[in-house]
Image 1 (cartoon, rainbow, N blue to C red):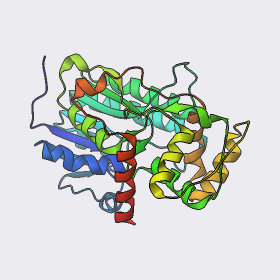
Image 2: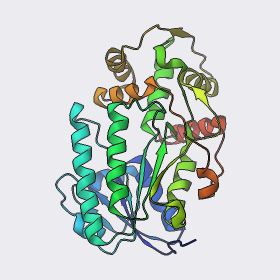
Image 3: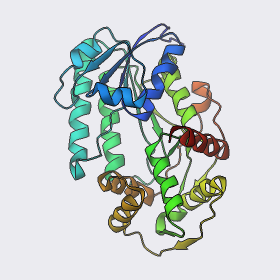
Image 4: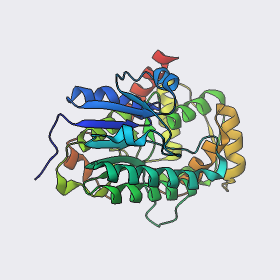
Length: 309
């Protein structure tokens, strides 16, 4: 089984975000040379990413991509653009991915690793998940041994989706949950996401050229997820079940309560209207990852939140 052998020259895009910043030291620990790509040095430093090699540029215009991808073996594509652009994020994310895919192909990048989202089994895609799938396909087509990882909610102290749920629990004495409360998913510990991403750099080629679904070992409804978080927080919150979704209204209210961007929250909440479960559990063995249970993930994430606030 052919593998890419360390040390490799890697590129991490989206390095000013939680996953990108956390991935940098993990790749360095494996002996890889790490280069970052971002629009703002200040945001990279604020995220805590320690990089000697940082290329400033813009994936939308293509500025800086040639320099960033020069000599790169494995490129991590961790760019998401929902915040602050309203409904235009679908077109924006497609154009960014296509520009990156062209530049990576021209640079001879051997592998692109992408972190996207789990897809509903009935094929009913929200705008958010449809955009992730479009990006995934563009990147898989750009390099023959690429890997796409699909995850649901990432449970980590700096994960925005997790912090959003924590803020709702903190600030709402009663949780009014729409009809999607009973839909199921498999949240994944942020530590496990990093292990999957790191392993994807060198995983054998028989595991590449495709998407893998990743998740934790616990299947929970969204209401059960909120209850699990509230138990660890020692903040019991009674829930009121609403017989409808009203996602546009609910997302505006929830974003205001959590002090988040409604343009980010509404597409995410649209994705909750279906079960989001892995198609199988084959990824853990293929990538050599032992996923953490949900309670351990929540406990660790809340400790990390306390230490950084």
